[in-house]
Amino acid sequence: MRYDLLIKGGTVVFPHQGTFRCDIGVRHGRIAAIADEIPSSAADRTLDARGRYIFPAAVDSHFHVGIYRPHSADAESESRSALVGGCSTIISYFRTGHHYLNKTGPYRTIFPELLELSRGHFYTDYAYHIAIMTAEQLDEVAWLVEEAGVLSFKFYMFYKGLNLAADSTHGSEYTMAENYDLGHLYELMTRVSAMAAKHRQRARVSLSLHCENPELIRVFIERVRREGLTGLRAYSEARPPLTERLSIYEAAILADATGCPINLLHLSSREALQAGIEVQRQYPSHDIKLETTLHHLTLTYDTADGVRGKVNPPLRSASDLAFLWEGIKRGLVDTVVSDHACCGEEHKRPEDIWGSLPGFAGSSLLYPVLVSEGCHKRGLSPTRVAELASANPARIFGLHPRKGCIAVGADADFAIIDMEAEYPVTVERCLSAQDHTPFDGYLLQGWPTHTIVRGQVVFVEGQVNDQPQGEFIRRPASLQEARLAVERADAATKDKD
Picture 1 (cartoon, one colour):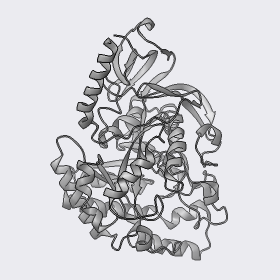
Picture 2 (cartoon, helix red, strand yellow; picture 1 turned 135 degrees about the vertical axis):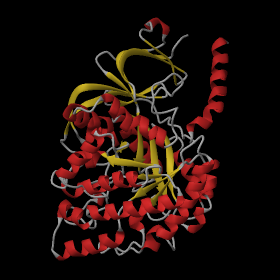
Picture 3 (cartoon, one colour; picture 1 turned 90 degrees about the horizontal axis):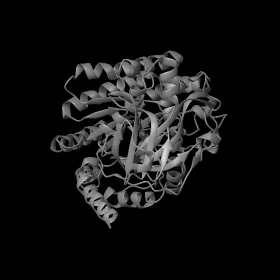
Picture 4 (cartoon, one colour; picture 1 turned 60 degrees about the vertical axis):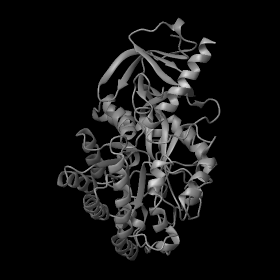
């Protein structure tokens, strides 16, 4: 067999198995061979990976394309940035209402528009999580799952009755929905649960939740502002871990009542992770996954760069950060993500923590943070890192077996990492359109030298090659096997010709 690309001499990281030195042959965008030795003469192109680790490319399952910028431009710049972090696949959140496309209506109309705005603008492959904001959209869940290739949904618990002291916007104005509350959440869970039960044998259909309680946030914001507190610590106290903990229990109770598989997003604190662990133990037969983020594993309200570090949920204390890492080491956290949201300096007001927009870019640091802070500083194995960044999100969100693994037949998606390369984080290195970063100057050891997407070497030593060629992935990926088998057969026929 002849290969389009041969990766030689690297230490390959196989999730849930271990690390082995071997060669990988790539043909037609897929892994075609894994062997102790494959001769260079068998390939059109050979990439020397000696002294480096070959990870399955990251699957960043928490991303916000187009939240603060035009969708197509954001897709292009921010998927380019994701390549820096060794990411080949993005699953981005999308909702109707304020931000994104600033419109409401049926997803049968809006989702095709979203796909058209996406086409030809991603360097990575991509998929979407969809937030069901209105009563009318509830009836589109089945269509989204069975025809649009969407397996995962979202509910923002802190939008419920939104009318915070720091934001005069009412929930109906922000969400463009009359009723966005626990009743709506219950109805959404029943729809998602029905699809999960119907398709259990071939896919995991699930609901992701941003867990913060808005009524408590309102009270705490008023208290913090009366006391004249400012800065990131004040912002954390205005949205304390208690608001996360309460919402996690609310979500778990409703999920248990409806049978809905859930994902608890961006757990930021000791209380939040403990609550996630507790509800898993309280409902042992229920499907509950736990996620945390790069910034909650690296930054605190004392170390981030002021208002640039504003994010929801807020950055917490050093002890919270340490507890999250302990949860990762004990195998209690399923995925680590970026929660990437390109938010320019014009949206961050140094004198006004309350009026600044939340969020910032981070996908360019996905593997660097996990390798540097996980492997080097805390003794995490490369295998565990690959599970957190790639294998687990691929399985949880219906991208396996195409993504998240190094196996014959899988997409040839790799992050080749120099485990010893040490650089400080800079805006220039991240290749995002964001003109600042709260990670500025943070020293990380272990950076990707190459990112490969479906056999195409698209990132090399800090530079992006070629034009955006990312594909939309209809989930579950396993349902595409028939189509892909036909394409491979066609390609084999052309080779013979």
